[in-house]
Amino acid sequence: MHARRAAPHPLADGGRADDQRRSHQQHRLQEGGKTLELAVAKRAAQLIFPTPSGRGWPLWIAAESLPTWRAVHPDATLQPAIEAPAEFAAKKWTREDALVDVLRARLGCVGPIRADDLARTFGVDDSDIAIALAALEREGCAMHGRFTPGANEEEWCDRHLPARIH
Image (cartoon, rainbow, N blue to C red):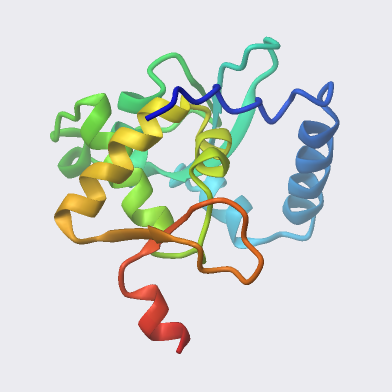
């Protein structure tokens, strides 16, 4: 087994991707989308987690998932400030269990994806993603291989995804 480099950070391009993402989110909010309604109702917020460049990386989350995300990124800020509903706030998460839960949800709604893309999306180290994906594979929830035609790297997906595609 060889050591993997940490995934390049999504802001390694000097923040252009971040600026584009924020511009897109602003556009969606100005259109009066559901995201804005949920944010106004304090049911969703942008979780902004620290990055190596010092600029925050935003990710929209539901109030119900706040405790999970706080376990993954305890230093993150929220815009707007929200609280988790009591029944969700009561559960205590380890960082490892929280990351497994986050990845389970993500794999359930995206097609095949590389582990380093998951690491960049969620602002965590490749090694943390590898551990969480291995846990999901042991549970029978995830599988890996080369699913995309022409893929040069291993991809991960929900175990049931190939059956739904074919």
